[in-house]
Length: 345
Image (cartoon, rainbow, N blue to C red; front, side, top):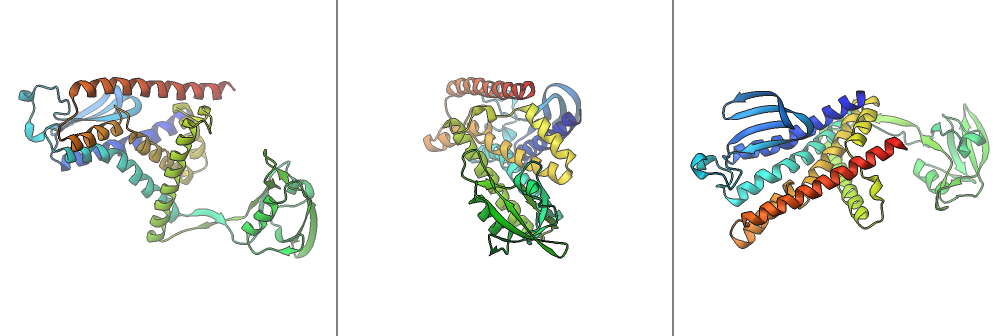
């Protein structure tokens, strides 16, 4: 139950941000907004404020903003042309559509920047063992949390990364690790365990972590960099899936999101909001894919309109929307199928 609540709160927050982007830019461009809904399907709650009805709907897997004159087949006699979306210049329409995904990405930057301001766990800067992993060579050899690693095979160490580099390069080779423990110098013979490919060695130790906080400018800088790194990783993973380099079984749906939302929430609000930032970037990037029914599909049609100087034929757009809906439903069913398989296994 906790997973479901955590997921609903997370998705509700990200959907609100996404639709808020469309809503605010539509208002800015002079487009009327008839409905602003969190969720799809049957209305649970609704309140009319001015020209807009604000809704909470039954299915919490999305949302929508219904714009005045959004449907180009609508009878123009019943539409306020001054507030009509279809009557606005193509660049104005493009801005309204881009705003949703863009707000998700900006929201992620703000979340991650806030996390850096509140503080993140980083290695202490001394090669001090923070913990040992059960069943790994370090623990079996006698290393314990609090040990200060001084050298490996006589080579003195200054940083954790220096130690990690030596261990990673010593898969299957015995090394002599000298440590300081409670003022005493001790020595342990450890053979790093190799990874599945037999290339990288591990002994099962984790660094001692300390909380480090950053100033607002530095936090914003790191939040932006981290958002960019996450975006690159997401796009790279998608490319590798389509190239067959990563199994499509890694694709996750609402059940996996619920599980991960619950897990991150149990680790504290910083972990929860970091996960929210990752999902927000996912939502923003996926919506930019040029698939009809997604924002990216509308963006593609607007870009074509800019090039050819007129809107794409309505029949072509309708057929493309049908294909896009089929692709989106197939994607969702496959992701849900993967979720079920994970539960079963």
